[in-house]
Image (tube, rainbow, N blue to C red; front, side, top):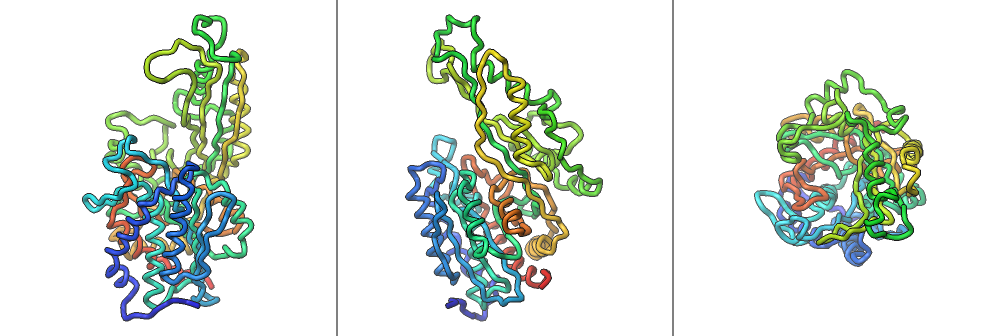
Length: 464
């Protein structure tokens, strides 16, 4: 049974009239520390899932369920009364968040939301609870004012921040339930308050850990000079992963990279990283990386290899004169269109073995991977999103390649054969994954209105 009601309001008027309540509901959700990477917070992750399920039922979604995945659950709900000739939209988001503690540099407890200067500060504010609720509040406004012009399915997961480990199997097992015409995701950002943008691609990801061992146990540093210190060996290995000009040194790393056409490169000029954002991130430091490419090209259209962590030996207070028995590094590669994660992992692994000195032992452990994704900008669903932004901003959105990764997006494209629309509302200085993460309340308001407009534009513009 549908709970849809009819009022004399438009969905936009309904959303505006209830905006204060929408903000309070987001605050309530942000208070829940749904940290998926720490098993100690499993009860709070489930609490957030139950909160979302209750809200879905309240606003009129049907078949709402908190479904097991083998890890943290997903929350599903749908509304399928727009008609057989209407498109079906699968809306994806995540309710889990990154760890956060006051000592990281927060100005207040990260799970005690605070509003300052039209921003709501809390862990998960923009990544991704604020954007998830923008999607759900748009559904509420539509269902409360006569119904949605398209069929709706919601899939909100609880493991995105821990690489969506169990979601691929869930998507494969639930293909029929998740059948749709397009996937809509709000887990990205726009250029600024004044300038919207649409990501048309996301980079893939390969992650691995190397462990270098030498002596059978930690040794007194008086033995230095007769053995290769594993910590030094790790430093020597990672120093050989890039050429001085910033290019990745792994043979064949760029073989499958798609070259951009002149028109696409010219379009990216308008979306390049502005000086103020560079200064906000880096201060007065000069840029680094492949010569001949805009910053936005290096972020979204070029692959990278990054050292995400180094460890080994003693790093506590005081000093300990020891040669560590083991040291290691965590490494990730961001991949672009046409690059294959398995091929890249094999190539990186072979090169690591090649450059490892024979005086130490090397172990390589894969930690996970995801494929790059791309939706053509002329796809009807992407064009519907462009028009939806245009109804809520004075400027048309820029098309920008995304530098990050959302693990499940490739699963939607490969297993469900669906185009993906990345409709983000976070600002560049939203601080996702860092201290003092925030979501601008104007972006929350415009996000709800833009999602409503997207559903209307999709119905008008998608082929039957």
